[in-house]
Length: 252
Image 1 (spheres, rainbow, N blue to C red):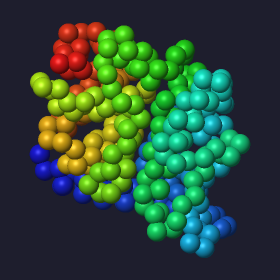
Image 2 (tube, helix red, strand yellow; image 1 turned 60 degrees about the vertical axis):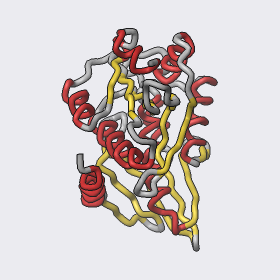
Image 3 (cartoon, rainbow, N blue to C red; image 1 turned 90 degrees about the horizontal axis):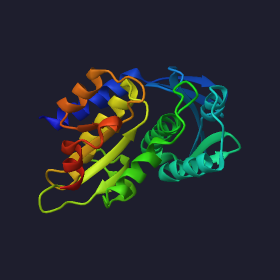
């Protein structure tokens, strides 16, 4: 596998697909990623002296609420965890991030990933799911005595930082395993995950693996699993987590 070529291809595709429009003192950034409403994710940025300021103008949380999502104390705790991972703050319902202008590329990447993570972690009323997928995985790990670290961040070859939900230490028989939970498998989550892993992998110990947990409470396209497999990424459907091959993958 020519990882450098894949990373370069992805970066070039991303550069070609991102558009921007000036609106007053802000620039509206439109990305090729889809949000929970299947609209292209967009946010706003402006420069103030030597600093750069990002905001989603409150769209992310307002859109979730319009879909039937309610902010319970536990969900607020989960939201805070996500925001802290990416250095994003909550100003009322607005997601915001401020940083030195020279860090624009890294912070723009972090802000985009944060919005995608908020959209993915919280299942809206469309999917009729009553619990958090990430919580379910954590409970499963505890029940199976799978010892891991949560909320890990690693810097990839590009210099971008990528967040992983869990990291399982290497054993005598198995390499390091990083884990991601994808609540709503889609083309957007697929492409961002593949880029993150291809960027992270060269900077991790040899033979490190990525395991993606897929919430299959709704149907999952086989193309999604095939695409992950093509990039040597293991997948576990949530309904199949107790299968022997999956337990071995996690515990051996």
